[in-house]
Amino acid sequence: MITITAMRCSVKTSSANDTELLGEKIGRRLKGGEVIELVSDLGGGKTTFVRGLAQGFGSKDKVASPTFTISKVYQAGKLKMHHFDFYRLQESGLVGHELEEVVGSLDDIVVVEWAQIVQNVLPKDRLTINLKIANEDNRQIEFECASSLDYLLEGIC
Ligand code: ADP
Ligand code: MG
Image 1 (spheres, rainbow, N blue to C red):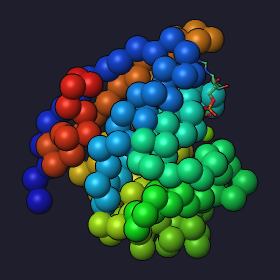
Image 2 (cartoon, protein in one colour; image 1 turned 90 degrees about the vertical axis):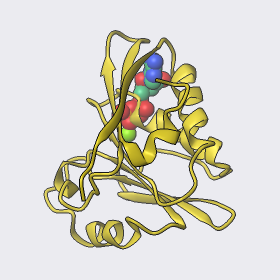
Image 3 (cartoon, rainbow, N blue to C red; image 1 turned 90 degrees about the horizontal axis):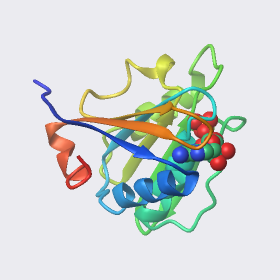
């Protein structure tokens, strides 16, 4: 399969709330089957963004950093959002298998923080979000996705 990077753009946010609202906007467009990778240093705003995503997607579940549990699930109707965080893990282990099982399922959305150790499991057709820390309150957020996911970025890029 040939993957074409269809969209790439960058948005600046100047508060955690701005970042959450941006996540919410994209969360409202999720249909199921999407894979989203979040990249940043610690404190970049990945979990903050996911909080917005889950809200926009329609879940009332509480979003917190899954660092200690590695994965969390937020539900909205028949759709589930799986939030993974592989920070400091040397091996993806059982949770890696859990990830493999939900990737590609149309009833599931996969969101991953610190995805280095599961790169081989992530499909090329995904949305990658890179959050760069400009200073305490400002983030430069770069989006990049395959053409199959361009509906997620319409009007944002
Ligand atoms: P990560 O999951 O990348 O480690 P978190 O979302 O847990 O990051 O934490 C981001 C921190 O940065 C929070 O304390 C948040 O309030 C703060 N922050 C300040 N400005 C922003 C911004 N523009 N976007 C996101 N978070 C911000
Ligand atoms: Mg986090």
